Image 1 (cartoon, rainbow, N blue to C red):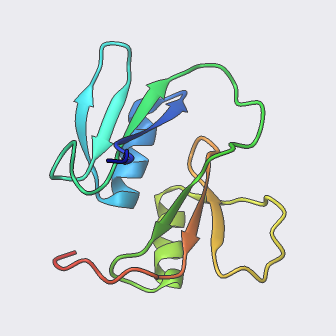
Image 2 (image 1 turned 90 degrees about the vertical axis):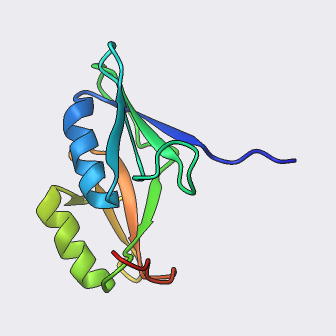
Amino acid sequence: MACRLSELVLEARDPEALAAFWCEVLDFVVLDREDDGSVEIGARDGFGGAQPTIILSKNDEPRVAKSRLHIDVNATDREQDAELERLLALGARPADIGQTGEESWHVLSDPEGNEFCLLRPRLAPVPGT
């Protein structure tokens, strides 16, 4: 038996705002809110489904370095350029981490500066999305 990813934890100055952003990006919903300000988001089928949940954990300390872990996303129902425009409209920003410009992916940052990559479609479209 092996382990599987069940949750990703991302520290945030404003967990509610960051949860709203990532819910729009991933078509997730808020699954839980804790008294400490943490927000858990995930797929509509809830915790334990095919995708890990994301916990946005309250942290007011400034980030001091580039994250050593980042999220990669794939569009499920449109081409990469159309998804890039959608993500930028949601509040993502282009990020420069030293890429050459020849990459097949786009490096972006979420509203709190966490880097993530938009890959060209590699997964089959999700029915009903």
